[in-house]
Length: 276
Image (tube, rainbow, N blue to C red; front, side, top):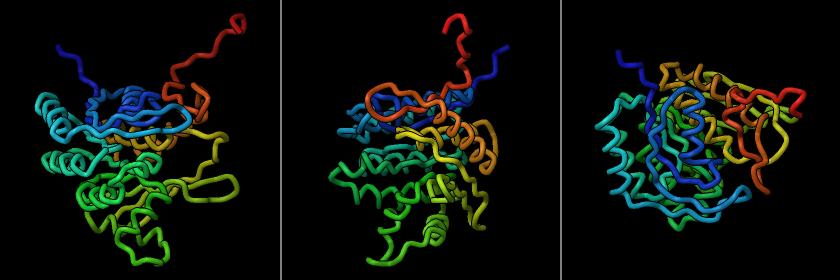
């Protein structure tokens, strides 16, 4: 009898040599949650633990070939998109996602430290808004990123209205929007999940000291893995936050820059006293 396979997740994203963000971070998070990742490289990053220096997008035809070969061969349970890399890649990924409308599609495409460096940054944001967000099962976006995205439809000088901005995205077709990083109190922040009915859940967390890279990637990958396992969105969002917060509490100083989440914190046993 064939053993039951792990849920398979197709992940579009960047190759990050630090494994803080992008595909390698996704693969680690998926594995920690008993899922198997299928990475589709959209771009290549250069940099270290302190910063990302540059992004180099791959050709859209290569993105399409990577993804469709996998989708035709294996029973994929969910799709995730991180950094798309270019407008052409957004168009290609949107076409692929539209061919698999029944699969959970988690979108986490905004990484300001990367997108600010691309010549087509504004066009890329607009393409994501028009082509990908309407297809998303869950969009993960920080409050800062949401404000910037809202500039693509608001009049200049118009005040921010987080709830109204979220509902604009939901009205476009996105099923759930998770807004992260809003101020909640002294040394606290909140993550709020919305759907067409409004606020679904709001979770408040203590800020963890230090500068971290990869928290958002870990969160969106964990949500994708839980959806691939058949968990409903509200519960998946809560469990993914718990996992991410624990990974950040156990973050490691791998280089001279930012701390990197430890996605396998649960597998590490403390050394016996005699070995310390």
